[in-house]
Structures are given as C-alpha cells and as structure tokens.
Image (cartoon, rainbow, N blue to C red):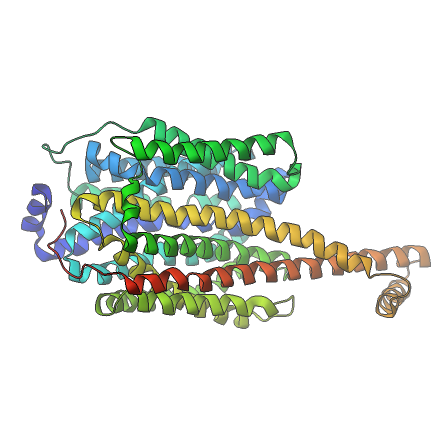
Length: 522
C-alpha cells in the first residue's frame, strides 16, 4: 500500500475503507446514471428535434464509444496525476457536459455532450474499482465489489424511473441535470478521502498512436453500424467507415504488441483465467446494456407506456438488486467464481428468453417480475466476474487489468446496443412486409376486420369512402404494432441466448486455477 494511503488509514482508521468505497460509489452512480437515464427521453428528443430513431441512436452510441476508449486512459491518468486529481477532473468534465446537454440547441450539440459524458464515465469507473481493490484485503474483494456493484447496476436500473418522472413532469432536458448533485458530492469526498499522487511515482509517455487508432476504430465501426441500414450497406460512406474500422482495429492490435508502454496490455490475455473472465465480461456488457435499451423502448413504442411508467417498470428490479448485490459479493468470497457466474448467466438468460411471449397485452407486473428475476442474475455475475479477472493478475498489472475489464464491458455494451437495434429495426421491416403480404381480399380475417371498422366509422357519421380509408389506416397500425412486437421478441431471444452462451467460458473458468490469497495490493 502506498504512503499516501497509509496516511489516510492512520487518520481515519479501518473506517477509511468504507469512506473510500463510498466516494467511489457516489462518483460511479453519477456517471453510470447517465448511461441509461436518457433512454426514456429518446421519444421526446426525437420529437423536439424532428429526428428519426437512427439519429437518436447516436446519443447512446456516442456515449458508449467515448466511454469505451477513455477507460484505457485510466491507468496513464492515475500514473501522471494521481487518483484524487483524475477523479476530480473527470467529474468536473461530467458536470460541464451535463449542463451542455441540458441547454443543447440541436442534436449535434447533444451528441457532443453525450460524448464528453462518456469520456468522464470511462475515466471514473476503472478508477473506482481500483480504489476498492487497493484498500480492501483480498479476502474481502467480493464483499467490496458487491457494495460497489450497487452503483454499477442499480443506477442504470433506477435511472429510467427518475428520468421518466422528469420527462413527464418537467422536460427531457432535466435528465441531464439529475446527476450533477452526485458529481459535486463525489468531488468534495474525493478531495478528502482519495490519495494524492505519489511524488516518487514513475511516469510513462502516453500511447498516442494507440489511442488514435482505437478512437478511429470505435468511431468508424459504431457509426458504420448505426447508419448502415439507413444509407444502405453498399453505400460508399458505410463501406469506407467499416473498412477503416477493420484496418485501424488490426493496426491497434499490431501496434499494442510492439509498443513499449501500450494503452492496452495484451499480455493480460496470456492469462487464461483473465481471458475467460474477459469473454464473460463482454457478454455481460452486451446483455445488460442491450436489455436496458430494449425494455423502455419496447413498452413505450408497442405498449404506449408513458416515460414515467416505463421507468417505474424497472423500479422493482432496482430494489431487488439493492438487496441482492451485497449478498452476491459475500457469495463470491466464499465460493469458486464460476459457480455464481454460471448461476447468474442462467438466471438472466432464462428470464430474458421468457420475453418471447410479450405483446401489447402483457401486464405491467408480469414484465416487472421477469426483469427482477433477471436482475438477480446480474447481481450474481458482477462481483464474481470482476474478482475472478483481477485476482488472477499480479500487482503490477492491476491498474491495466482494471481498465481492460471495464473497457471490455463497455465494448460489449456498445456493440450489443448497436447490433440489437439493427436487428430489431431490420426485423420490424421484414415482419411488416410478411404480414402485409397476407392482408388480401381472400383473407377472411382481414376482410372481416375492415368491414367492422368501416361500419364503426360509418355509425360515427363518416361517409363510406372515408370510413373505409380509416379502416385501412387502422389495419396498417395493427400490422406495424405486430411487426414491432415480433421484432422485439427476437431481440430479447438474442440477448437470452447470448447469456446462455456465456456458460462456455464460465466452464473454462472452472478448469483454471485461482489465486485465493495474496497481500493487499498497492
């Protein structure tokens, strides 16, 4: 443990561990809250700026892309500026970006604000994890991660509830302001409880080429996927973006293997236990961000929930996680990591697969129970997969490992959201075309429906031509709703199957050895 941390322990005693954890947790809540709180506001933002879902998707893509890239900057920032200064800078940037998002005059400024928020969140989250691992002994890592995990997963779960109330009661702009008080509180706490930079700490130059290659790769890939369906996959711009992404992605890996001070230490993946946990981490990120995006949008577009209702839908799951996370953390300290991870993957995978029957008539509590059941699984996964990956590393690689673990989770989230949105959009069009093709004069169900709707409008006083036209409009709405329902069902099935696929690397975790004890890490 470094001298500055020793001084803080001498000043505050054993309680300092919980002061440091609380500081990390408040900062994490502030930044993670912004990850999903905007989801319930997307329909309002689309209406305010007159944009489509493909453009609105950039709000999530910009955040996840910059957040993913910034996570690998964490180790370099800590070495140069120390934990306290990095934490305070990141949250100050977050406050500025939140204000910018709240006052944004157009969608381009809003995308910029989300990108800046992502940079801040990407710096804070690995740092928070590092703080906890350095102040707790190894036998309490699971317990500490259980407490910290409340902020990682509870904030995205409760964010839509708070956001929905703000959207319905005030304006969508207020979703950007809600995390500012948490940020200010975390800055004050960090100034008191986080250690300053060690004067004797060695510094290394920033891997600027690696950062540039990674940034270009993430931007081109995510933007290419985002605009591909709208512009066409054979569009020269899309082909150019995806080709550039492939070249810079390969170039990044090639350079990181040869760089003296790499942004991402690829030797981490020579550790089989870390690699197996990394695969589970990617799946975890894709699943949690994909499902958290799908659920609010599904209930608002198909079931016509208000923003508040869609947020309240996730509230029971948040309460469940608040109780489940500390328990899950203790379990991960007492059982081999693969057991809680496997149980968590199975819980979440099965609960998501059960969404294959949802439709416009599915009740609020039926959905809430399924979501809560899945969140028990997430609570089991998070502490166990984190401790499994970081316990397997030597102290010298802990900072790099923390950044890489968070990077991989967000990378999975960024790809997961984009891939699922693309699939749902494409399947909506395909299912709509298939259903529309069956609506012919020879289809007795269709003709009977049109006759009944036409008669109802005629009874209301419309002439036959207008009544018949209104009946066909209604039929089109029914087809669109049914097509969307089938598409979202497929999206939920994909997420569920992805989590069940994660059982394979979890099985490999069982076969690898785990470092069960070592001194507290500096």
